[in-house]
Image (cartoon, rainbow, N blue to C red; front, top):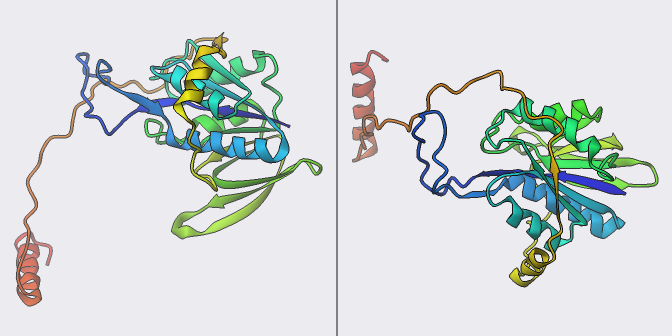
Length: 259
């Protein structure tokens, strides 16, 4: 069984974000990049399936700051292959990124066809979550997103997956393989790997580098300006007995013509 995991780097929003001098992008001079959290869950799910089914796991990630560390960590965790794709800008739009990956992945020896393609269902800088379903469509694979658990029956060529809906509702689907699954969570947290194993992976190299088959096309939407939120008026805190607070709320609503 072969599993392909797609990962990407995203800005660490714990850090203070600053707008670059061009006014249309983030200043990356002091910006730290980390792996997209849901992609990390996708890798963990792939490794769990690898442990159970003796599957082969390949990890592919577009070139981005600090992506080598993430790929070496994936090797240290147990991935069989890690591949960095150059020529896809971290700021490329969802459609452009999906098209570039769709053109590139079939040309990487031994990556496709895969029984399962896994990635996060979305990222913090990809709020529409379209990369996964668009790429699945381009690869002619069925897609199911918001997945939190996978059980595979290799003999039947199917997977039973748990998909999360609003309000905590969980549903179970049976999907014929090969398939593309967008991961929301995993049955276990991403595994810890000792730094010594990561350093050993770094020393051995191991990262394959592949150029994108075609550069991403210009996104249909263009960012013309970016700015930090402006401070508005401060909230008024109402204190006192419940009756007094209720009267104050009623007075405020009446003064604004809402009562």
